[in-house]
Image (tube, rainbow, N blue to C red):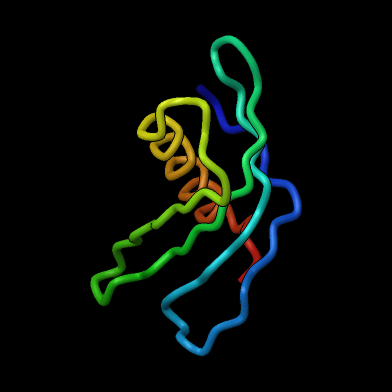
Length: 87
């Protein structure tokens, strides 16, 4: 499984500086097909600099959720590290 890209990525405005919330359409490549899913996720930075990511799906998936969440978390951390997510 591989996450290809985020389309229509938008950040929700908030007053808490250590919590960032986003919505997007995730495009993923599965072993037998491709999957487009509307997701929302948040990145919370702890006082020690650790990043906690919470992912939610707008619609139920027709695929096991745990591998999808793992791939999405890895992709989100990479995008955040490279500076591709809106601040």
